[in-house]
Image 1 (cartoon, rainbow, N blue to C red):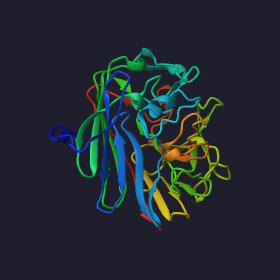
Image 2: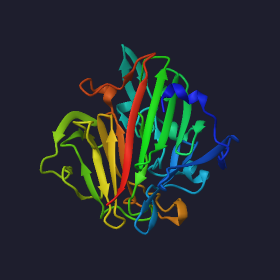
Image 3: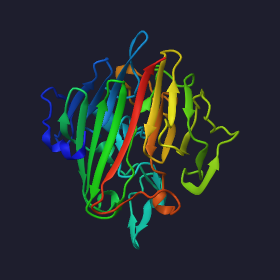
Image 4: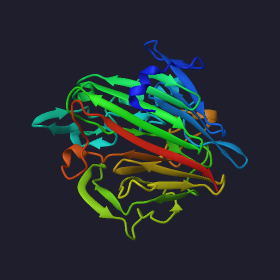
Amino acid sequence: MEKNQISHFVVSENAKLFGIMPDDTEVSCHTIANQRGMEATVISYGATITSLRIPAKGGKVDVVLGFDALQDYIDSYQLPSAPYFGAIIGRYSGRIRKGKFTIDGQKYHTSSNHGEHTLHGGFEGFGQKVWQVESVSANAITLSHTSHDGEEGFPGELNVHISYTITEDNRLVVQYWATSTKDTVLNLTQHSYFNLDGHTQTIEKQQLFINSNKVLETKPDSIPTGLILKVDNCPFDFTSPKSCPTSIDTTFIIQDNTVPVASLTSEKTGLKMTVCTNQPSVHIYVGGNCFGQIEGKEGADYHPLSGICFEAQHYPDAPNHPHFPSTLLKKGDEYHQKTSFKFEQL
């Protein structure tokens, strides 16, 4: 689906009410599917994927973490470490050092919501906004959001469209388009936590492959130093499949976008997920902990090993590192990102 086609569609009459925000805004719920039985459920709060059900041996498996109720999503942002389950992250995924950057000599200071740094867009990023549902078909949904000039300190009124499509070869395709009224910085990603054994399980026995031999070096506060390190003979070397790490929060540099950048495999369900993207990096994060404070969907007790994120994006803190790929979005230009998650039965 092309961005210029979006306005010609009508929202499906099959939308369900997921909940009502404190300001009385309704949050809708939509399910899309293909003919092979793969289906995703998306809510307008955060353009969030709440479930992703994949046909596997023994029946369908819900492979993403989430909650059953809107209030749980809202409350999750008050946890000691917000999980951002299934949400669209913006305006800037990852961290911006001290919430400061400069564009053409103009200094900007964004919200310091993670110590002295900006994380995932600030105190109220895109994952906490109610998006407008623009179109729904049997296998696709498009949502939009307008972020006002100066929101969380970012310049320009930003218009964003997101589409989720399930293809007949069992791919979840995520596309993003955006334009701004001023020069700004932009780094969007999708923040689902995957677990191919099912969302109530742990990820340690699943096999992780990352087609990258370079990572960003970071300081103890996870801010990039600017150096790029080789992964040879170190714990971050996943150039051949190995068990999922129990702790990782690392940006891997993508050398070739024409081939898959990562994969995850479960011997238990026989599922394999392959990730492709046009972005320069994929940030890998293992987590999902709800600290025993919020119950996951279907009564799940989410913990630090509940899921793994594949955050296809630009480098964190890129506006402060001129040698990193640029995240500058010029006034009048269009941002476009495409990432896909393909599922197959081995």
